[in-house]
Image (cartoon, rainbow, N blue to C red; front, side, top):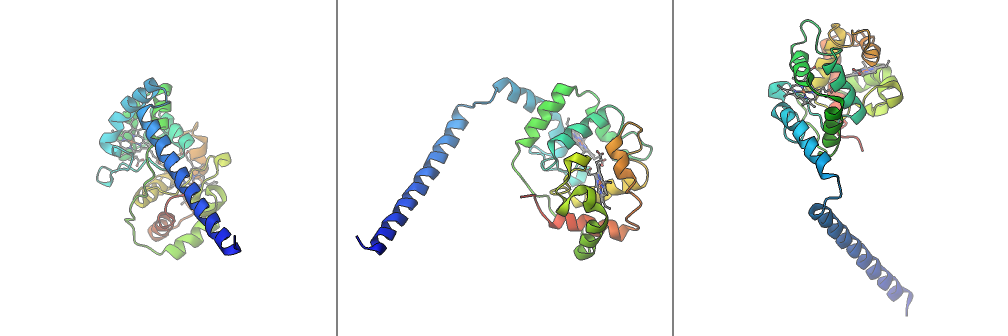
Length: 228
Ligand code: HEC
Ligand code: HEC
């Protein structure tokens, strides 16, 4: 056998191996669909728990700007659960003038810890989806500001830093990022004495000096797309 025919055979063989692995993957996926290994009761509880959220945040957590409800699909699970507890326990959405926050706080009022856990698990299972850009701004300027003042906590390119309680800012609606920054700036979020991570962020609320800087940073984060 010549070297080149050996190479051809090896190539054909690897192609066959790839194909059989793909076929196996398909069979396994189909198998999963037909006989779910997950605890059926937990799944049922989760879908029940998220059902009310879908009216504003969308059936797969994709968000709805017209209702001011942000996408939930790309939030870190720990952060998502913490925010639900914050809304429920009066640490967020209670400040005067925070009208969107108060709508959400009313929604979280009756959630117990088990429901929060079930919702968090269900949202983590939604397919990834990048929200669309809605802000046109100076992305290069936004990147400079981000690297100067935000990256120390939110990590390089917005990936987040769980040790500091600073969430990932990737895959989050730009309009929602800008509004949250303004809420921190205006003392409408992160003021509660028991909201320690919120206070950390609240102290950063004066760093971006004007509307343009806030829009630039939000547009920059949006331009990064989903985390890898
Ligand atoms: C009536 C509409 C409505 C419903 C129903 C609703 N939300 Fe919200 N939610 C909002 C709005 C509006 C905001 C934005 C609040 C703000 O701007 O601070 C929000 C914000 C949030 C946030 C904050 C996201 C972040 O990045 O900090 C989370 C988490 C959230 N909602 C989860 C849920 C879950 C889970 C449910 C179901 C139990 C739910 N929401 C039901 C309207 C709603
Ligand atoms: C000292 C650390 C620190 C720095 C610096 C910092 N942040 Fe934060 N940020 C946090 C923490 C902690 C939270 C979580 C607050 C909470 O749990 O409510 C947060 C939350 C946020 C949120 C809310 C996200 C959401 O889904 O609701 C936005 C938006 C945000 N930061 C933007 C920025 C921007 C823009 C900068 C730079 C100007 C910045 N942060 C700098 C610590 C920081």
